[in-house]
Amino acid sequence: MQFLRLTIPLLLTAVAGLIPIIAFMWSTETRWIHATKDRLEVYMVIIAAFALLLGVVNVIQSNVKKIERRQKGWQYGAFLLAGLISMGAVGILSAARIGPFQGIGFLDDGTRTPFQYMAEYIFNPLQAAMFALLAFFMASAAFRAFRARNFEATILLVAAGIVMIGRIPLGETLLGGSPLLGEFTEWLMTWPNGAAQRGIMIGAALGAASLSLRVIVGIERSFLGIERNE
Image 1 (cartoon, rainbow, N blue to C red):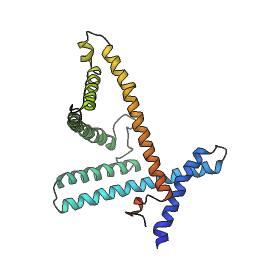
Image 2 (image 1 turned 90 degrees about the vertical axis):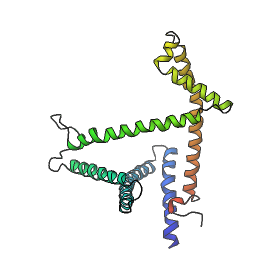
Image 3 (image 1 turned 120 degrees about the vertical axis):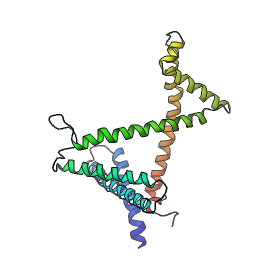
Image 4 (image 1 turned 60 degrees about the vertical axis):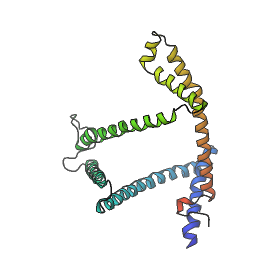
């Protein structure tokens, strides 16, 4: 039981993690390792499709329980399920070209299919509304982050103000049409901001590599549902 529950998944994880690394380091003349890597990528797409289906099932189960128990916000769960089921059903019928659902895009005569109509007039406006609401959360976070509590926060506040003014026509108008502020803004975004972004990306890459190595050698086992090493 321990062998099936722990050893086999760790061996499969190690092999699946090492093959892409070896294929990246070896020349393209070694065809078998690259063919194996390509086959693993195909398997990854298949597994991701099943994971997507599992996520849909999980969303349905959690929201159905919320609706049954009349928990807080159960109305939103009902709307979510209605949209998920209707959009999914229309998409499946359109992909299979059943009845009036002939495709998922535009027809040959330029008319919209039912799926395209729902995507353009229901999904896209809802997505735009959600991103519009995120703007208020971003403004609130910026207000808290840009408070000049110390020297570093003051530098961040001044730089953010220069960038925001330099990105809009008002900044050029304030300087009498001079492009100096815009050029200084580009310099800030290219050099100081670019250097900080590179540092963040390097740190994130090192963290991802460290986590990947822990998974490959079997130190990190949380994906197996194991809280600590056994």
